[in-house]
Image (tube, rainbow over the protein chains, first blue to last red):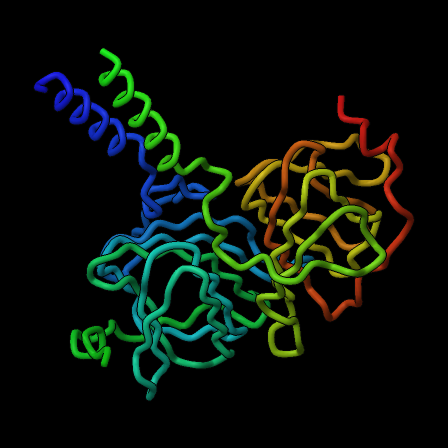
Length: 153
Length: 153
């Protein structure tokens, strides 16, 4: 009987070891470099897949947020599309309620709109950002307040 | 002894059943609709994530190819960036050798360049295509010959 229990325990350990939970699957694209800019709080990694130029307008970049990490409020003069590829985050436009966004969601942020995005407190968050560059660089505003960050209803 | 073997067999079946092989992980974005256009051979599914317009120039779409499926030769007047998210495919520009491309690769196709892409014979292939639309629609050319499709060296 003890031997059977040992085999069951061994099998259980194997099952656990070989399972691939959805959140630890290897990312499609490398995380890239840890950002050292001052326009965010928490850890954010950036991998520039395509640099926008006069031939191909849009920058394409992967951004990976640690739990709780968030960008400051900002504006994209040419707008931005976010393709959420992993985890769960918050997205808020000025004057609107914060909303929760998940893997598989697509967010279209219009040119000139003040907004912020970040990871929820208990999950990382990864997206591919497609950002036209020829209408100007991102305009950075103030950090997100704790009140705004915790305002999900 | 027989009982032990039964337990081991049972554990092995469980191990197999609960493993999540890399290629069967749920896609991030739905496959979308099976294409019924005449500019490809084999099965290709399309999911338009963003329609390009005057505010946000680029179309963003997920394309999923069954094994062996391929587009005809074509030209993008505004160029195109392909972000390979799953599987293995071929990419060839006119006058150059065919090359093999994998999950995690980024392909930048310049405006006006004649090219084709498709899945290899024994694997599916998925990418996110970012395609500027304001310089004109895709120009379709002839189907890819068997000789070109099988020309990897």
